[in-house]
Length: 133
Image 1 (cartoon, rainbow, N blue to C red):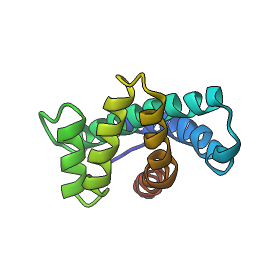
Image 2: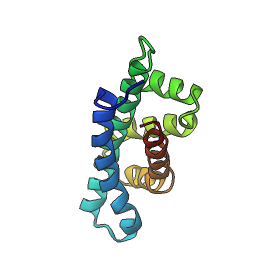
Image 3: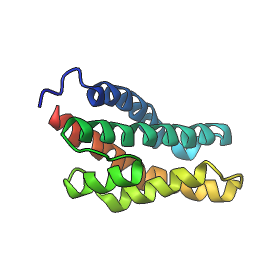
């Protein structure tokens, strides 16, 4: 498969940029203002969206048909041993919750999971996909 110039490769480039911005905030998370924390939460949502769309485009480019939506895409990527589907399912649920949370305490609980669990999983995904390029 020639991955240069493919849709997933182009989207992956955007994913890497988003992940880089998110990762830069990780070591400073204890000193972030509430507004900066909100920005980190939104950056997580955006980065997750790009990640699963990269996955979907990659799978389509690899010959899979009919895989739509994050749940099916994550499941297939897990079956192909390209990620841990359990942590990604958790991430998807966190992203869904963040879209509907208006309670600071709940969002701060997710904030800790993003810092300690999800950013490392996003970084691991970036490494695996970079190796495929």
